[in-house]
Length: 318
Image (cartoon, rainbow, N blue to C red; front, side, top):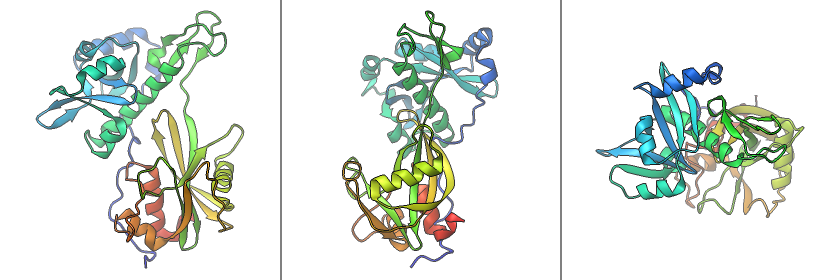
């Protein structure tokens, strides 16, 4: 049985969090600065095509950073965005058309892969995942906001990619992040996990859902747990957050104290849900469960929520 002092070793890195770049928000409106930064020999660019990232491939190693000139050679960019500064060197994002990205598939010098694969296989350094996530999320926002939500006119890129302007009604549109709660409900020595139909076989995870307008984090945790599993919760404790660029969410991780244990699963939301003992959760983390059940990998905040409970038990609620 897992005890209060259980440790699983050093905690793994939480993917997409903790970018090392200075976002340089105060420089975005300075068109001359942005142009000079783009022209510098140390400028670098991430190449994004929808859900896919283009990586340069050489001697079994992968690099997501291209010079702006090399990025343009891959295909013209409808959008170029200033992601931030690494010291004096500017990092940009370059949007690549799907057809141009497809041409690179199978090329010896490139790998075109979705961001989940890049993170799970550790194809690039952990310090690069945060900037890539920001680049991908921003590109997704631009792709969905070509027209003004106020009057319907075409909008244009502004503020180095961090705003879109409408020339007709003068509306300004800014990137949005969709806040989501992801929570592990706990009843002393057991925790509540669910299964979505889209999960890989035998994978179980925390419950999750979008925060609605006018709703606090705590209220969203209580509502989603009740709606999806029929379980009421009382205390809610914030754990950590994770940018989740699929397409542009922020996962807000919480532990919640269950005040009921009877399950009433909403089958339109979950394929199944059940209580797992703390010992079972530890086995699932280690991929040693007798029925081959497992939890999400360390790139997902769900893994970290479950790990914290395995290590600390109900103390995560204190």
